[in-house]
Image 1 (cartoon, rainbow, N blue to C red):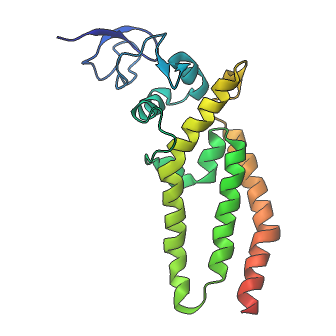
Image 2: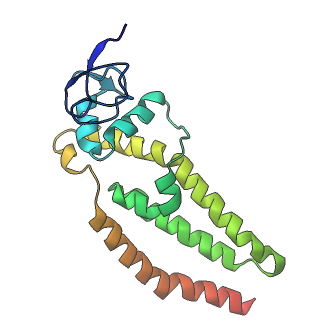
Image 3: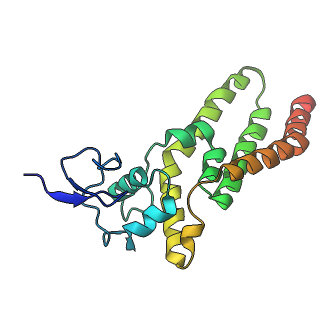
Length: 190
């Protein structure tokens, strides 16, 4: 027998056997979400408000990995866009770290010579895979930290295309003025 529950997005009545809310069409994959439900000791409503875009999907992943310090869960967008996804989710410090690691990979690849240069593509793919596999874990820890701070944490959440654009411009400038000349110098002096 189907139990009556509330939609995580709009609060409409639906059943735990439904795939989508009949009112707003949101996914009902996160079962039994109530206004007073908790995740990692914090109310689900606060998680939803902070995450904003795709909150139901993220909450489902976070619930499956609740109370785990680290977990692996593949995020295709983080894999494809790397630091841009991190900045899009407003994780600025984590974004800077990801950009620096991406640039370190470029510099390390500059040291490869001869047949080893064929290793550049696998090295980049491995790095991107690591970003994709641990993105949900890093994001969950970031959201939890922000929500634990308390007041006005919901204003820091959500997404930002502006942050992606600014980060791309700054990264491009830094890469063209510092990283690429350094990599070329390494290649030429070998």
